[in-house]
Image (cartoon, rainbow, N blue to C red; front, top):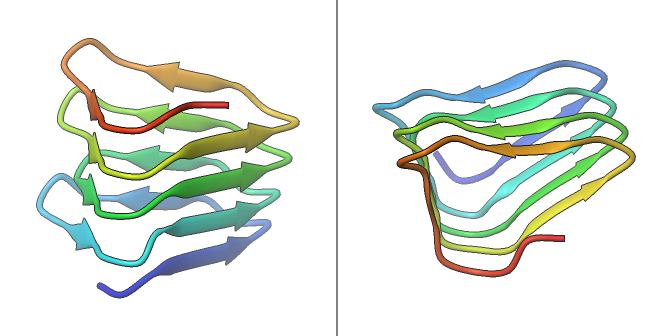
Length: 79
């Protein structure tokens, strides 16, 4: 898919899914199980990278926690 945007609702990128333009969430949790080719921004909630996650852009979490499982791949910086 092109991009995933959410406000006050959870977002899940499934293991068999690829997001090309990134993920942005305001007030909703994000769980990445598949591939994201751009960055992930989460404000006011938590970001979880599952063991099958593959994220190519920056990870930004403001007002929440970042959890990265063993096996998850991330190729940029995390804040």
